[in-house]
Each structure stands twice: as structure tokens, then as C-alpha cells.
Length: 502
Image (cartoon, rainbow, N blue to C red):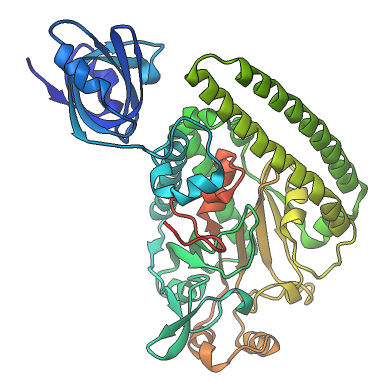
């Protein structure tokens, strides 16, 4: 018998052939003399069917003792079956256990998020997490391909930085052989130097922010891609961001439409993403926040949340009643999972109800000159069908390196790109200040050390040109693309306040 080594992703093209798969038991069940093993191998999942006969009795006995997440090698005939996961199944002729798995902690039963996060190293094996991180892989590849195909040069920037890049309040201190340095908040300043050599550059790597925040949008360690372009003004930088975003969305939809649907993501809003994106000024954003439309939106949200909470409460009661009557353990486990999910969603809805009055008050009383908060960005982004640029913020709310707007010196030539559907900021960028005297003044105004930035000031002393760039957060973008409620699912090993394991 000719046996071909294959992966699950290759099975459809191997129909009618005998193959060997190597993977892990995701689930198993028996029905009389038939055993069903759901095997995963990193490329997909496959239902494997083993019928008990005199000839297969020893194999059946080996398979019967396979626990969840046992590693195995299986051999079988590939049969097309539209009802099966992946469109085919494997009729087994051999099963060889490789590694035992005893009392695997993440069972089909209900588990809370805290429980799962403590076992993140194992949770990654679940179908949902597997899909999310494969989309992340494609997202990162799409970003790299966009810049590589458009003449950008990759520049790796330092993780240890001697000076602040964004805000002193969010710096992680590091003892660097007796010298105080910081974990990098951005690679931008170094990219500005590189773009004066190569014209168009980008970096991609981890960045760190010591924000004492526990919101759904914050991580202390996250990944960011940052392009920087010489001879670019604010409009050129925004156009670059538009082109990159449409390329990313198109690639993810092409490669992962079915995966997004499996995650429960409505792909219709993603299909509508097209240039040009809407553009509003910071001042126009403030008017929107203070206006009647915001009140109407949040009052509608409040009523919808109340209705949803009542509906979930009724659903939980019904599930509890069914659980009392369930006869089989698998039925009880399934109902327990449904109840846990409903209770978690109810907690989220009640939390939203508690926060809505505060969000409304902050928006309606927003003071011109402040930076937009997360709830403000959510409100504004929901007023548009697609991504929206908010540009030209007050200089007092932004970093020292942003170009002052000559038409209104109160403002800087920057932008935030807000993702639709309430996901908020995913890109922040600006035209950089290219005049030496103005940059020196801005450094002094923010009481930064002139000495620490002397090398940066050199870029304005020796052939300064207009230039600009932006930073895109991978995790926030992935959360938007996949429709995730919490950013912690958008990175393999999230770092949050109080969480550094695993």
C-alpha cells in the first residue's frame, strides 16, 4: 500500500489516496462500533472515522484510549464528504499514539476568560484562537508586502531608547549598565534619520507603553509598523495610510473570508472599505461630540443595552431549565458552555450600561484642546460607514515633533485614523517638524532634555526636508478585522497590567 505523508490542508487534492497525518486529537466520540476522531495538525481539522471489525479491533482499542490533545499518527483513505470539516474525511486503517495527554485542562466544558488566560500556552490550540492568529499572520504579511512592493526599505530600530518618543508618563525604565534608558515607545525618530538616506523606510517590531489602563484596547507590549517618507506632507501621508489599509483589508478578505465568518464577523462592513476615506478636522470632531447626534446615539445604545440585558437574563433562565432536564453528560456540558457565554456577555452589557452616562457626559462637555479619549473615538467612528481621518489636533495635546500648521499655529499637521464600527484609533501619524528653530522651541516647551535630542536635531541642520509617517498597531487592526471584543485575543501572549505569564 502506497502511503503519502500529507497535511490536512492538502487532503482535498488527495481524494481517493491513502495518506498519513500527524497531529493532535481535538475531540473524539464513539457511536456503537464506529469511532470519530477530530484531528488537528496546524493547517486545519479533519474528521477521521474508524470502524470496528475483527481486523481493526487492536487499532480500535488503541484509539479508544486517546484523550484530548494526545499526539497521533493516523493512516487512512481520503473520502470526499461535503458535510465534514474541510470537505473530506479520513477512513482510518491505522492509529499510532505518539504522546499521551492526561487531564487536559481546557475541556469542551465552559471556562472563564481568566482561567483561559492563565493557560494561554494551551488555549492557543483552540479553534477560535488558531483562526485569529492565522489571520494575524496574513495581516502582518500583507503589511510587509505592501511596503516591500512599494519601494520601502526595512530599517530595524532600537528597543532600548535613551529619550522619550511619545510621552514620559508611559515609559518603562531599564537599568542599562548603570545608565537609565527606556523600552522603545516608537521607532519613529530613528526612521526619520533613515528616510534621509533611503527616501522611504519602515520598521516593524514590539513597542512598549506603561499605561496603567485595563481597557479592552490596551496592551503594555504590542507590535507596530511605522513607515517614514521623505518629501511627504500631511496629505501624502494620509494617502499612504489609505492605500495600505485597502490593501490589507482586500488581502484578509481574499484569504480568510470563511475564517472571519466562523468567528462571527459580519464581513459586509469590510467589503465596503474603499478610498477616499472620510476626513474631518479635530474641531469638527469636537462639534460632533457636543452635538445632538451623539446624545441620540448613546441614548439609543442605552435602550438597546437594556433590552439585550433582559433578553440574556431570559436566555440564561431557559438554559438553566434545560440543564436540569438534560440526561446525557455531553448535553449538560454544551448547555454549561452556552450559559457561561451568556453570563459573560451579560456582564459586558451591564458594564456598558454603567459606562454610557459617563461617556455621554464626557462627550457633551468635551473641551477644545484635549486629546480624544477612547470613548470619544468610538462615538466619532460610529458616525461613519468606513474609516475616518481626524486631522490637525491642538499642539498642546500632541508630541513635540509634529509640524505646526502655518495656517493656524494652535494646531499641528497630524492625524488619527479611526476604524469604523466603534473600534477607534488604529493609526496615528503626522508631518514632522522640519524647521530647526521651531523644533528646538517645542523641545524646550515640553521640558525635554535638549542634549538627549542633539542627534535628532542634526537631521534639521543637514539638509532638512518635509517628511512624515505613521504607526499602525497590529493588535488593534486585527481586533477590528476579526470583530474581537478584547485586544488580548489579538496577540499570542498578551501583556497587561498584572499579567506577565505565560
